[in-house]
Image (cartoon, rainbow, N blue to C red; front, side, top):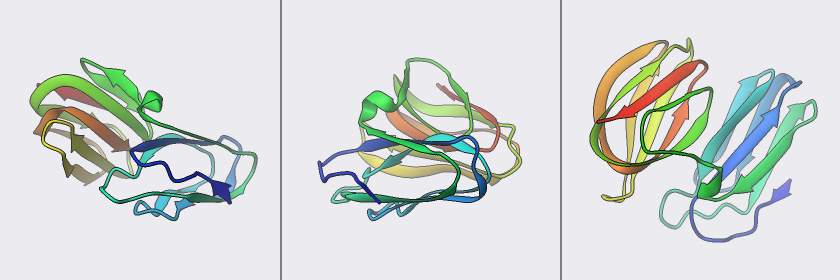
Length: 158
Protein backbone atom coordinates (compact mmCIF):
# COMPACT_ATOMS: atom_id res chain seq x y z
CA UNK A 1 0.00 0.00 0.00
CA UNK A 2 1.26 3.48 -0.93
CA UNK A 3 0.36 6.47 1.24
CA UNK A 4 -0.63 9.38 -1.01
CA UNK A 5 -1.43 11.87 1.72
CA UNK A 6 -4.61 13.88 1.49
CA UNK A 7 -3.85 17.18 -0.23
CA UNK A 8 -6.82 18.62 -2.08
CA UNK A 9 -6.79 18.95 -5.83
CA UNK A 10 -6.15 17.02 -9.00
CA UNK A 11 -3.32 14.51 -8.96
CA UNK A 12 -1.60 12.79 -11.87
CA UNK A 13 -0.28 9.25 -11.37
CA UNK A 14 2.40 7.73 -13.55
CA UNK A 15 2.57 3.93 -13.23
CA UNK A 16 5.20 1.79 -14.92
CA UNK A 17 5.62 -1.97 -14.83
CA UNK A 18 7.60 -2.77 -17.99
CA UNK A 19 8.29 -6.44 -17.19
CA UNK A 20 4.99 -7.32 -15.51
CA UNK A 21 3.43 -10.70 -16.17
CA UNK A 22 -0.18 -11.65 -15.59
CA UNK A 23 -2.78 -9.21 -14.31
CA UNK A 24 -1.44 -5.75 -13.36
CA UNK A 25 -3.74 -3.66 -11.16
CA UNK A 26 -3.47 -0.21 -9.58
CA UNK A 27 -6.33 0.75 -7.24
CA UNK A 28 -7.07 3.88 -5.22
CA UNK A 29 -9.30 4.43 -2.22
CA UNK A 30 -10.68 7.57 -3.90
CA UNK A 31 -13.52 8.04 -6.37
CA UNK A 32 -11.39 6.81 -9.31
CA UNK A 33 -10.97 3.40 -7.69
CA UNK A 34 -9.62 1.22 -10.54
CA UNK A 35 -6.82 3.15 -12.25
CA UNK A 36 -5.07 0.30 -14.11
CA UNK A 37 -6.26 -3.22 -14.97
CA UNK A 38 -4.05 -4.70 -17.69
CA UNK A 39 -2.55 -8.03 -18.65
CA UNK A 40 1.25 -7.90 -18.83
CA UNK A 41 3.48 -4.83 -19.10
CA UNK A 42 2.02 -1.37 -18.55
CA UNK A 43 3.18 2.23 -18.72
CA UNK A 44 0.87 5.21 -18.52
CA UNK A 45 -0.58 8.20 -16.72
CA UNK A 46 -4.02 8.78 -15.27
CA UNK A 47 -5.66 11.38 -13.10
CA UNK A 48 -7.12 11.16 -9.61
CA UNK A 49 -9.35 13.44 -7.58
CA UNK A 50 -10.78 15.48 -10.46
CA UNK A 51 -14.23 15.43 -8.86
CA UNK A 52 -15.10 17.85 -6.07
CA UNK A 53 -14.64 16.25 -2.66
CA UNK A 54 -12.60 13.28 -3.92
CA UNK A 55 -9.40 12.79 -1.96
CA UNK A 56 -7.29 9.71 -2.49
CA UNK A 57 -5.14 8.70 0.47
CA UNK A 58 -3.78 5.28 -0.59
CA UNK A 59 -2.91 3.30 -3.71
CA UNK A 60 -2.65 -0.48 -3.87
CA UNK A 61 -0.56 -2.32 -6.49
CA UNK A 62 -1.03 -5.93 -7.55
CA UNK A 63 1.71 -6.83 -10.00
CA UNK A 64 4.18 -9.57 -10.82
CA UNK A 65 7.32 -7.65 -11.71
CA UNK A 66 9.18 -4.50 -10.69
CA UNK A 67 7.02 -1.37 -10.83
CA UNK A 68 7.23 2.36 -10.06
CA UNK A 69 4.56 4.90 -9.14
CA UNK A 70 5.04 8.66 -9.36
CA UNK A 71 2.35 10.94 -7.94
CA UNK A 72 2.29 14.63 -8.75
CA UNK A 73 0.13 17.50 -9.82
CA UNK A 74 -0.54 19.01 -13.22
CA UNK A 75 3.23 19.18 -13.73
CA UNK A 76 3.07 15.47 -14.73
CA UNK A 77 0.56 16.16 -17.51
CA UNK A 78 1.82 16.80 -21.03
CA UNK A 79 1.08 20.47 -21.79
CA UNK A 80 0.38 21.70 -25.31
CA UNK A 81 -1.20 24.64 -27.08
CA UNK A 82 -1.73 22.59 -30.24
CA UNK A 83 -2.30 18.98 -31.21
CA UNK A 84 -1.68 16.38 -28.49
CA UNK A 85 -0.45 12.99 -29.67
CA UNK A 86 0.65 9.87 -27.86
CA UNK A 87 0.47 6.15 -27.37
CA UNK A 88 -1.30 4.43 -24.50
CA UNK A 89 -2.82 6.05 -21.43
CA UNK A 90 -1.99 9.70 -20.81
CA UNK A 91 -3.14 12.99 -19.32
CA UNK A 92 -2.82 16.17 -21.40
CA UNK A 93 -3.35 19.80 -20.47
CA UNK A 94 -4.67 21.63 -23.55
CA UNK A 95 -4.00 25.33 -23.00
CA UNK A 96 -5.83 26.79 -26.03
CA UNK A 97 -9.43 27.93 -26.22
CA UNK A 98 -11.56 25.55 -28.24
CA UNK A 99 -15.15 24.43 -28.72
CA UNK A 100 -14.45 21.03 -30.27
CA UNK A 101 -11.62 18.65 -31.10
CA UNK A 102 -10.78 16.18 -33.84
CA UNK A 103 -9.82 12.90 -32.16
CA UNK A 104 -8.24 9.77 -33.65
CA UNK A 105 -7.20 6.38 -32.25
CA UNK A 106 -5.53 3.31 -33.77
CA UNK A 107 -5.85 0.96 -30.77
CA UNK A 108 -7.85 -2.27 -30.76
CA UNK A 109 -9.18 -2.15 -27.19
CA UNK A 110 -11.34 0.31 -25.29
CA UNK A 111 -10.66 3.94 -26.23
CA UNK A 112 -11.94 6.59 -23.84
CA UNK A 113 -11.40 10.34 -23.69
CA UNK A 114 -12.49 12.18 -20.54
CA UNK A 115 -12.41 15.97 -20.48
CA UNK A 116 -12.41 18.45 -17.61
CA UNK A 117 -13.12 21.89 -19.06
CA UNK A 118 -11.17 24.44 -17.04
CA UNK A 119 -13.43 27.29 -18.17
CA UNK A 120 -16.76 25.55 -17.58
CA UNK A 121 -15.66 23.30 -14.66
CA UNK A 122 -17.38 20.29 -16.20
CA UNK A 123 -16.36 16.63 -16.51
CA UNK A 124 -17.40 14.86 -19.72
CA UNK A 125 -16.87 11.50 -21.39
CA UNK A 126 -16.15 12.76 -24.92
CA UNK A 127 -15.38 9.36 -26.49
CA UNK A 128 -16.03 5.77 -25.40
CA UNK A 129 -15.35 3.36 -28.25
CA UNK A 130 -13.85 -0.06 -28.92
CA UNK A 131 -11.09 -0.12 -31.57
CA UNK A 132 -10.06 2.52 -34.06
CA UNK A 133 -11.80 5.87 -33.90
CA UNK A 134 -11.93 9.09 -35.88
CA UNK A 135 -14.34 11.93 -35.16
CA UNK A 136 -15.00 15.46 -33.95
CA UNK A 137 -16.50 15.97 -30.50
CA UNK A 138 -17.37 18.97 -28.30
CA UNK A 139 -14.34 19.96 -26.20
CA UNK A 140 -14.43 23.27 -24.33
CA UNK A 141 -10.80 24.30 -23.89
CA UNK A 142 -8.63 25.02 -22.11
CA UNK A 143 -9.07 21.55 -20.66
CA UNK A 144 -7.46 18.63 -18.90
CA UNK A 145 -7.87 15.48 -21.01
CA UNK A 146 -7.39 11.87 -19.95
CA UNK A 147 -6.90 9.36 -22.79
CA UNK A 148 -7.23 5.60 -22.32
CA UNK A 149 -5.92 3.75 -25.37
CA UNK A 150 -4.03 0.62 -26.41
CA UNK A 151 -2.65 2.39 -29.47
CA UNK A 152 -1.67 5.73 -30.95
CA UNK A 153 -4.05 8.70 -30.62
CA UNK A 154 -4.37 12.40 -31.36
CA UNK A 155 -6.49 15.21 -29.90
CA UNK A 156 -6.59 18.33 -32.10
CA UNK A 157 -8.51 21.26 -30.53
CA UNK A 158 -10.45 23.52 -32.92
